[in-house]
Image 1 (cartoon, helix red, strand yellow):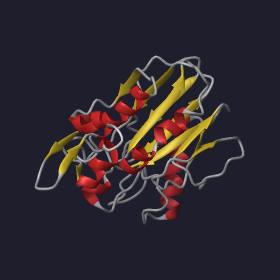
Image 2: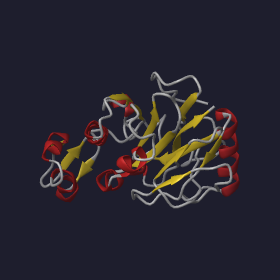
Image 3: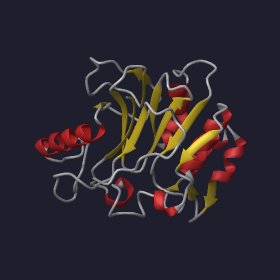
Image 4: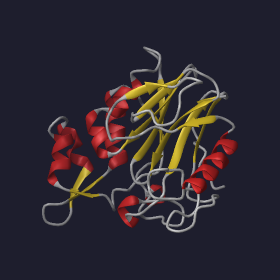
Length: 244
């Protein structure tokens, strides 16, 4: 399997990983480690891929029903797949906060002592609605928090309309800098940059991972990442964080 292991100074018992599209059993166009059970792939293939992912993590991932909102839920040993939310957190060991993506931004969070971990599914709608703030609010109060940003559609590929720009700039004028005029009435948006802006506003200065460069762009790296914007019919990869 071709996993991305975050390079950040978390305590040793805090574990995190991000899958790519490699290492599974699904045929095209879901080739090969598709973890999404809602995209048209054969359910047996998805189940096999999820078993492989869980074995590689050494923890139990919990898959949410993500709806591009801001709801955050706590995960316990008995939490089942399919809870409707776009962020999750836990203080329980061996339970992986997991978000599935194929252009949206996965955000992983933990406090510096490793008492709790959280994950957020940050597409533009969720990001504008406060999904990072929702996840962050469930970490220990007053703690220094670290964040890792995974792969997402990059600032050279994410074309949006004026309504998307307005959703951010009307709330925070400084976010203007994360939008660049493109075609007529269109802009190129820096999703990772917008997330960094949200994290700074929360006082999170330690942010690692996606810096907006091409290597992190899902749409620009078809051999490594799924991309819904690029392919329309696409699998899902996942980022997960857990307490070991």
